[in-house]
Image 1 (cartoon, helix red, strand yellow):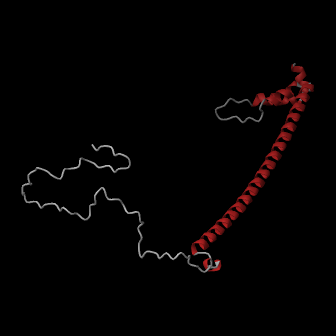
Image 2: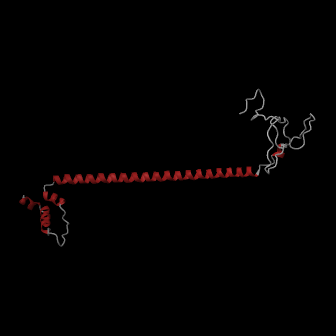
Image 3: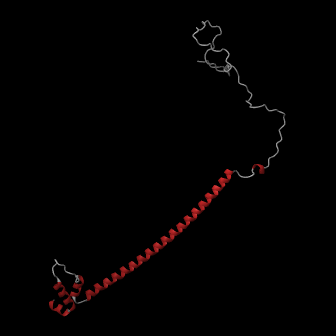
Length: 196
């Protein structure tokens, strides 16, 4: 390993080889001898140049600053670039599309609200008509029950409970005579009182 440098000395890797070596010359084995002066490899002790790298001719320093004619803004900004024009047109198109979308959305929302209002009105009117019909039907039924209770002819109540319009089929029992008797007793209360 290298010994630590003292102060700002550069680090040298490895030990420095003494110039006087007692080694034998290498045997010739068919390889060329490496060049002793390689122009592309520098030594570690060389310090880099402090001058900056300048491409082209070095500037002449006269101490004066060159006067530059002021360039008018109109020369620089003669018009927007094609990209700026396209971006501006695109933004305008997007704004137009957004406005059209918002208008269509507002129109659809208004139509939906109108449709919902109509639906609710129709539903409410149907509900009210059904409620009034149910109330009237219930009232009629209650009046019929009260009328039956006040009626002295019990056979009339019996005939309301029995289905008299029943048609007898081929295989069914004939109940025509029983129906005729019930109808007769309902229509002639004097006979009903004799049976009671």
